[in-house]
Image (cartoon, rainbow, N blue to C red; front, top):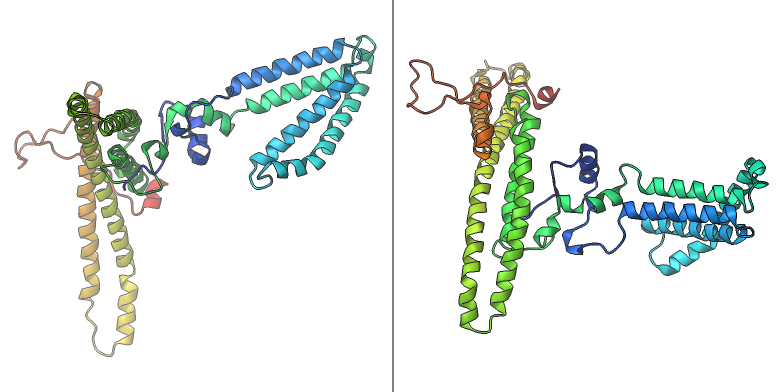
Amino acid sequence: MSHPSRPTFDPTLPRRTLTRLRDHPERLLPDSLGPSSRLTWRRGAALTAAGGASLAALALLVPGSAAPLIALLCLIVTAVLLGLISDRGSLADDWADLLMHGFWALPVSSAIVLTGNLLLGGALEPLAAAVPGSASTAALYLLVTVGGAGAVMRPGMLPRLASEHRHRYVLPQDFGRPYSHATRHEEPEAHLFARLQQATDRVQEGTRVLGGSFDAAHTLPLLREEEWRMSQELLRLRTLRREVVQRRREAVSPQVTRALQPQEEAVARAHTALSERIAVLADYGERVHAAVTAHREWEQCQAIADRAAEYADLALTTARDTMYTDEIDDSLLSVRAAHSVREELVREAVDAGSSLSAALHPGDRRPDTAPDTPPTGDARPAGVPRPRRAATPQPSAGAAED
């Protein structure tokens, strides 16, 4: 893996928001776009509500204002329809397409507004005699305003969530060129972060495949926290490193180059420190990946052994001479060997997870993560903890998940 492959999110995001953003990464905003000059969604909804309420009061209190306000509302609804059409993709690719769509959008909007005005006029007829303006037009504006503001602020609206939480996720594009070749020398932070992401993905895969024999309920959240924290540190390091590289290129004299040396050394030390921290997490991910590979190897050997009797029967019924089935019975030995390797690697992964949790949070060590004391007569050297006993392995990954 040479580049980050997926977005990384702040683990403190609300669960619903995190799920929505993770399921639609194409709607997220890369940091390269810079801060948006548009109004925030909440301010836009507030201004919409205030403007609609003001126009409703105008229609209610000013005689003769109903006709121009109805015409204005028809134009507003038409603009909303055209905006929805352009947002859906291929229906409107340019202004000429939007103009052509306007020939049917304006009559449809006018029909909707006029029909609503007539219906509300009949329902509010007693109130119409008590106010100088148009009660139906005022009510129509209030309904449209409340509905529009509610639609903008509805829970789970992807554009709003992506805009409001854009500083709480990191995209692959933020680390340079995700879809073109970039060497480790050009984008070292991207390669480091890709390695960290791979470790998190491997532990998540181990939780799914190994089932109850591998419990990462404590280490997986820690890995996600470290992934988010290091994404911020690596992005900051990338910004400073690129600044130093640019200044070195623009240096006009050796004196400028010498002045840059302290900054270059600071960048190099930071890169080394982050590399060492990520190497610890990546090593844990490799241990879990080895356990997952051994588990799948055991499953495949078990599947082969389950079919051994059928193949032996086929050989006996088709051979004329006596058939020795020792070779087929060897598959059972392969299953036992694969199971032993699987058990040992899972134990190593569990022990590595306990050590990792203690290393990342030394002040938050849980009692059940303390190493077991070897019993009397244990042949292990002094000071070496006995691996924790894993739970009874399940026959398959699907059964473990159930």
